Length: 194
Image 1 (cartoon, rainbow, N blue to C red):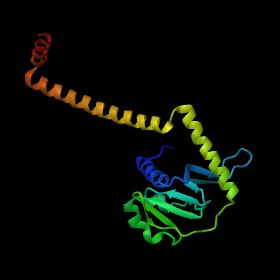
Image 2: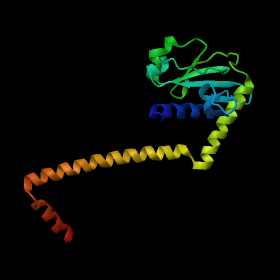
Image 3: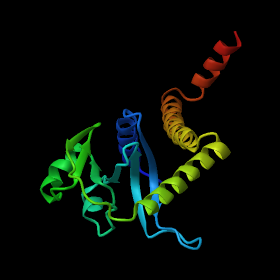
């Protein structure tokens, strides 16, 4: 399933913020657990690890229904955060547990409290390495899938704008024909021939 523009925006925000710290490394869509070639049992939207051995897990939520859904919240790190829009945060701030932090608009709106890891650290390391290898492979094979996705999104917008402009042109030509008949086209052809 394709990510919404809002999800991508929140991903860019949290990535930019965590990359300010040059001793912190992050991966998106980190799958916890991997046994005998089968997919894992839990996916973390964004997971970071720093040179001090601190793990931070981020759950990205873009709507009230998304926030309140029964889908598992992957809070497995020493520090765990929701990544929200300002509007959503205002709606749900009383529902967020005291130990869970909140990231809104490139800043931490609420600090997380340190927890014990919810899974073995080696499981996190393996999952982190798999996600990093997956992303590196995508970049190697595709010269940047994110750039390709962005280009495809822009192409769709350009095509939509072209279709709107074409429809407006057809409507304008119809109005000119109704008012002036075919003469307007003949006059235009004469001007272009000169």
